[in-house]
Structure formats: C-alpha cells, structure tokens
Image (cartoon, rainbow, N blue to C red; front, side, top):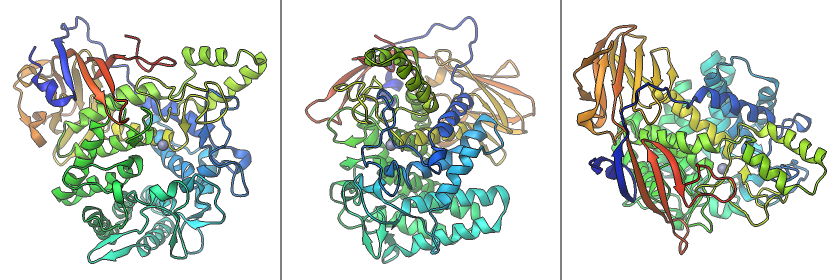
Length: 587
Ligand SMILES: [Zn+2]
C-alpha cells in the first residue's frame, strides 16, 4: 500500500505497511472511557486519608512496603506529605465530578466532600489560597504563602459550582479569587506577567528555593482558569486579563526565563515540560475563543516541539533534556487537553489524542495486574506472607490511578533498587500530581468525542459515546469504523483518522451506501446533511498494519531507537520491550 499518508502523520520512518484484511464479523472496540473513569474514582476515594483531614498522598511508590512514605519532604508541622498540599489535592478535587459524570454517578461521596472541604479551607480572608509551599520547593519551607496555582484551581471549582447550582456565593468567591490573581500581575504596557511565573508569593517576594528556582522560569497556569471562570460566571474582565497574560507569554514579558522561554520561531525550550504544557492549554483555548491565530500558532509550535521529543503513542518526556527516558503523566494529560483545542483548527491533532488514550492512558492505568503481583511477590519473598497480603490490600486503594513516569515500555523507570521503599526507589514512580491529570485527559477525550455545533454534531474521536445529541459506537481499532445514531436533526460530521486513504473511505446512511462529502476544518470530516432523528450513519476506512521506527531524543548521548508495530492507531508491540513490567506485549 501507499504509505504517504502514514509518513505524514507519524514521526521517523515507516518501514513497511499493508492493509488489514476486511473483517468477517464486526467487532466493537474494547476501550471503554466510562469504565476507566469508574475505576479512577476508586483511586480518588482511596488516596486521601480521612484520619488526616483528607490529606492526599504525593509520595507513592507501589512496589515498596509501605507504598506511601513521604520522603521528598518528610512529615512536618504543615502536613504528613507536605508536597501534596495545595497541589495534589487541588488537582484531584477537580476530577471527582468529571469522573462521576463519565461513570454516571450523581452524588459526591464523603471523601470527595472531605477533599473539597480541605482545599476550600485554604482560602483566607483576602480570598486567596494560602498554603505551605513545599509542593513548589520540594524542600521543607516554613510558613504560608499565597499559592496562585491552588487559587486558580479553586476558582475553577467555584465557577463550576456556580454553573451547577446558581449559588451567588460561589460566584462571589470565584470573583474574589480572580481579583486577587489579577492584582498579583505586573503590567508591561497592555501585557501582563507574573515575576517568577506560577511560584508562590508573600509580601511581594516570590519563592525560589529548591524546585521553585527552576519553576520560576516556567509560564504560570493562569489563562485557562481565567477563561473557565469567565465562561461559567459571565465575567468578561477575566477574558481581558487572560488576553493580557497570553500577550505577555508571546512577548516574553516575564523576565529571567532563560532556557525555559519558548522560542517563538520554533516552539523550542529546555527544562521541565509539564508546567509549560499546563499553561499552554489556556493559550490554545483562547485562540479558539477569540479566533486569533497567533495564540494557536504559538501553542501549536510548542506542542509540536514536545511531540517530536516524545512518541506517537502518547509517551511524552518529563524534561527536555533529561537523564533517563521517563514520561510524566501530567504532561500526557496536558497534551491531550491541548490536542482537543488545537484539533478544532487542525483535526489531525485528535489522532494524537486517540492514540494517547488508547496506548498510554489505557495501559498505564494502575491495577494489580498478574505481572505486578508476581513481581511484588518476588521482591518481597523474604517478608511474612501476611505482610505482603496486607500491602497488596492497601495497594488496591490506588487502583485506577496512573503510573506517573513510565519508561517507553515499562512501568518501571528506576530499576536499580526495585522493591525498596520510596517513590523514586521502589521502581515505579507514582507522584500524586499525575493520576488526576491522567483523569483529566480521559474527561477531555470523552467530552470532545461528540461536539455539538449550530445545526449539527461532529464526531471527533473514534470512541464509544452515549451523548444526548448522538450515540457513537466505535469499531475495534483493526476494523476502522464508527457508527453514529443521530438523536438530533441536522448535519453529522464524522472524522476518520488523518492517515486513512481518502479515496477508500465509505459511508452508509441507514445501511445504504451514500456519497462521501468532506467538510469542516482541513476538510477532515465526512459529512451527511439533514440527518433525521434515529437515522444511523456508518463511516468505514481501511486500516493499515505497519512498522514505524523512530529515535527518542530527550536523553542526549543515550538516544533510543524504537521499532513500533501498529495496527491502525493501536500499538501491538514495541522493541526494545520493557524488562520488568512491559506496557505492550512482548515483540
Ligand atoms: Zn505529575
């Protein structure tokens, strides 16, 4: 077959490609986002400790006994796991309602209410969140600081509460947070910036100890929270402020960013990736909201830069450059959240989202798999059976979370002290920031699968989705089809993968072949007009099996050649395969 379309969509080289034989029996996809969300709720309910005021856990190392032992910052007067405060908890707080919406659960449980109470408790009289800032320093720090990150997350929570209940008290508290966040900005003409990016501030000083020295060069995550608040609470002033901050990003108003400044020509930067990607989400969203292509261009260039240091199956590096080949699920979640906005302009970005969900998130969701339990048993063979059994019981509370920093094909990133206690000693890094960001990605994929438009609906992603406007059934990845049952009258647009050979895409309306018409951004959608309620469409595309070779470049001097066997958007095998807990099947 002609591999040109594959070469345009995948990095590196395509070594061979052939079409999968036509299936005899249709098979639906096994990927089930609501089920993944239901399992994620298990983690969200298992991580916080009710006995410690629902404090959450950051320092998780599942192959150790115990799995939770705070070592990044040991327990002190501010908390048992101080790094979790104002960070892990705020990230988790936003995911409960999303995972419940996906899983079909209406009521908040006691744990969700507990975590919520905890983070709302960070708000002080000035309306802002004051916390101990160990999550920013990674070292013990005395006292309480204004935590802009936590403040912005709580502003989003309250805005969503207002949207759900109409309670004006929530809107007032969100507004106060917005005013506080805006007041901390420094103005550069019409542009705004935070000295020290997102790091905590107190009495006009910003934190620069430990990790914060580096993070003070990252862009702050402020644009997206402002847009979310503006949209849900109807406050245009927050859009104006988001524009001013985004203009500050584009003009490099924030001083001292050094290697972390994003090169406006190439999108390149060096250093910690996640805080950048988290900040970029809002810039892409602002580009869609305002129609200003400069925002989309700027965000997309950095997105592409990160993609080229990662893979096509959703593994993206924690640092560029870094010492070992490790991803960070926070980055992965952000790249999905960015991809759905960038996909509004260039829909091929939805393929990145689809591959990331299918290959990275599905396979890095943490469970006590047979292989994990067997390895755990071997590593702890010297301990009494009841100790090992009790440790495994405790680990069940973490099922449904996400491995945080896997190697390209292994849950284990740090193999030298396997089974020791501690997040970076046991082998599997499960930093608490990451599982909720993986959940955020599930939610983005779920909510953007079906997109309502004036006069119709758009199906962006090949996932099952029971949506009020359309019910989507996805074929197995090797079969290449989606079926859409219309629940509203109007036009229906369905997106086949960008690698599909266009001339061979077909559509049936109510089981009858129909002409294929392309429309939408980049003409990426097969479009049927005037679809009636109850009418079904089925779009089909031929699926290639192919072998890709690419080189991972985030570890200078230790570049890694990967050979990846694909069936459509699904990875079948990867070489070199993982040695301990491989993510894909062995080659
Ligand atoms: Zn993380």
